[in-house]
Image 1 (tube, rainbow, N blue to C red):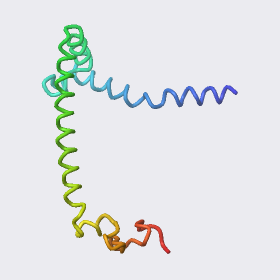
Image 2 (image 1 turned 135 degrees about the vertical axis):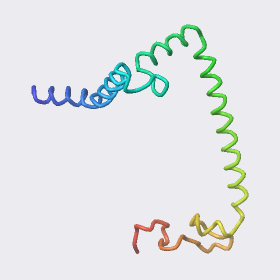
Image 3 (image 1 turned 135 degrees about the horizontal axis):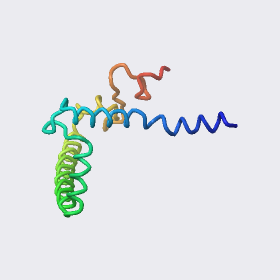
Image 4 (image 1 turned 90 degrees about the horizontal axis):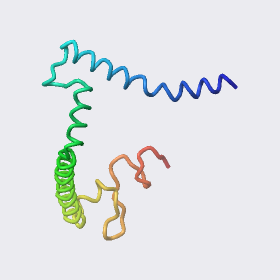
Amino acid sequence: MSLSIRNRALAGVLPWILPVVLLLAWQTGAQLGWITARVLPAPTDVVAAGWRLTVSGELWFHLKSSFERAAIGFVIGGGIGLALGFATGPVPLALPAAGQHAADGTEHSAPGSDSTGDPLVRD
């Protein structure tokens, strides 16, 4: 019974070992001057700046701006992908690469694949 409890405790702690070691190495390297603050500020400086931006309200402004830029990029990229998908849909040259059926009902599949479209499945 105690072995099972110990194994569960170890399983709960084990995933945290590497991140904690990396944070400690990062903090130590920053304090000893091995890592310049211009390249990678110390974790304590990052947390302090995050707290300062949260309290002042600036963090939410910057997060909103970042979210807006990401959403705009998603809409632009999704729109381009959708347009290209519609554009290549009726083009027969795109069918073999996609392993789809042609308008006449014949199947086009990628070279080396069988009728399932899965190259690892053999008839």
